[in-house]
Image (cartoon, rainbow, N blue to C red; front, side, top):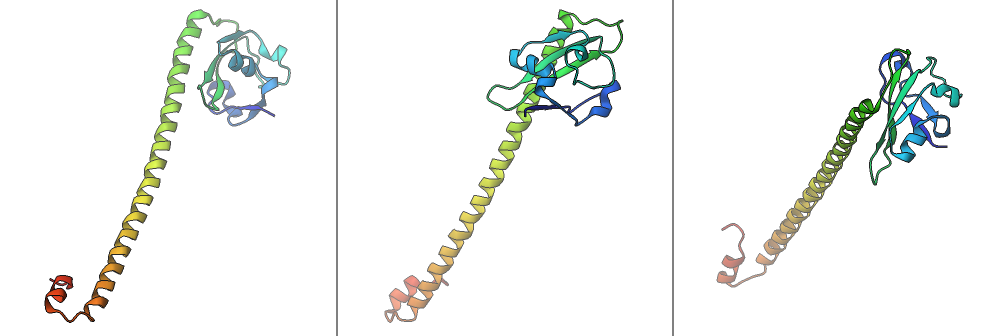
Amino acid sequence: EEIFRWIALAGQLKHHLHKTTPRFASPCGICVDSNEPLLMQRPEVAYTDLDLGQPFHDVLLIPLTEKGSQLKGAIWVAAHTQMRKFDGEDARAMRRIAVFTTMAIHMAKVSQEAKTKAAEQSLLLHELDHRFKNTLTMTAGLLRHQLGSIVDPSARTAIDLRG
C-alpha cells in the first residue's frame, strides 16, 4: 500500500510528524498525479480517513515531484479559520518554493552520491597502491634471491638494489 509520510510540520499539526497516511485517503495522491497545485475547502469532508484533529477551512497543496526519482509528495498550506483564503498568487509563490525544495533535495542526493563514489574510489586507489607495493616488494625479493647465484661482478652490480 502506498503511503505519504509527514516529514516536516509546523503549527497546529506538528504533533503528526512522521505519521503516515494511505495514498487513497489523502488529497496528496491527486495533487501528485496531476502535478498541479490543488486548492480545497474542508478536505476532511471528502477524505474521512484524514484524521488530523483540526478542521481545515482552506488547504493549498503543492506537488513535490522529481523527474526520474521516487520523490513524490506535497506541501500543505492550511488555514484553520475562515478568515484566510488562498488564491492563484499563493499557489504561484508556493510553486516556486516547491521547485526550490525539489532542487535542494536533488542537490543533496547528488552530493551524497558523489561522496559515496569518492569514498569507493579512494578505497580502490588504496587497494591498488597496496597491491603495487606488494608487487614491487616481491620483485625486489626475487632479485635479491637471484643476486646470490650470479657470479659475474658487472651483472651483480647491475642487479644490486642497494646502490
